[in-house]
Length: 331
Length: 246
Image (tube, rainbow over all chains, first blue to last red):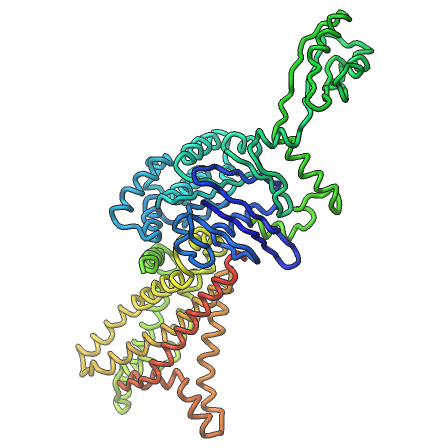
């Protein structure tokens, strides 16, 4: 549904997006994950046709964005990160303006406005002036315009930024519902959001895709070793050394100052849980917890993005390295 | 075409909802009212200076040009710069409309509002017609001139709005450009070379307006306005396409 080929964007000497290629299948929800200033917004702006790429091509629903921009844009519903609407217009009035802008007929517009207001729960505020709405409602108006013309593709840039927890849950529910009817590309720097909403994830850092796959697949690929958490009732002086001596255990790290809790990193795919249990029985230690720790995407994310940093010029992130360029992109 | 119409109606409504537009309307009518009242008073007092009052009113006074030179850049100053400043340009330009359609829709809205500024001045002609003889032909051609020169100034104004993020800066750029167009024509009085003087004379807006007010319609002048409008609208849509994201 979306085909991105060798997309590159330079801002002067700074390359914000560096030769990115990927595709989004019809009906799929793809999450773009990356720290601030990684190039997510720049990539999205090129896919929506707002920003011309330095090199590369984008095809949306079979229409080349550079050769046939109007037809390609008709298939896209886009909600930018900081959505700016005309503050003096009323919600319904604004939607009907957008419907005419999309070239919808009177009948299409009427049913489209009604449906999108209903789906985005805007009926209560349909006659309110947009300037007086809260950020959460404005975000919903943004979504309503994006789905108004029933596009094939929805593109959402940081859809939950700046909302309160209750609004975040409401917007996520809405996104999940929309995902069942549209192809969805969404960017975020909030990790649980990706796990919660997306079929597939790609992690972007410094304008490059550093990893992609399902959340499960990324876990397998990047955190091969099994992680265990062991918690005894009391601290035992030789517990750490005894654990480390077991077959299949690679590393033992104390997890709490009390000295009764440990993190255990296993060798490859081996499972030393049974020997830990036997060790505890043998020594008469009371075992309170013995669990496998599921690595979160967060760990992978931190690992991928910091590893890149260490290889690079220093510890600072892309945003700190080049504040002007990052500000430019974020705007 | 749908896109142009949607943008046109939105912008025209936005004019009538904004306080600035009413401030402009009030000032504009005040200046023209003073101009008309002064002319009538003057022509009444000096019986020897008989002439057609509307001929003086249209372009014969500094007040006329002052009003036009301010209105030209001020009406369109907000149209594109504000979209860019607030960021609403992003969802406008990702809708299925081209830059040219956006520029045209907004330009036509400013033109419609400009014409509605002049509408009440028809009363002056009606007053003159009521109390004395009035030849409606020159009045019509004078309004044609107002339409032509106004179109040109508004196109300059929208170009200024396309290149700036700040509407006040846009108005100042627009004012400088309008002033430039005006001054180019005045060079006629300073050049000695016969051919050059004649060439520059074609661009003398004061001369244009004086002739329009007398009922002389010169198509070369209309061509000048049309090509000027086309040129500045083209530049505006290019400026919009080239640096949308700044």
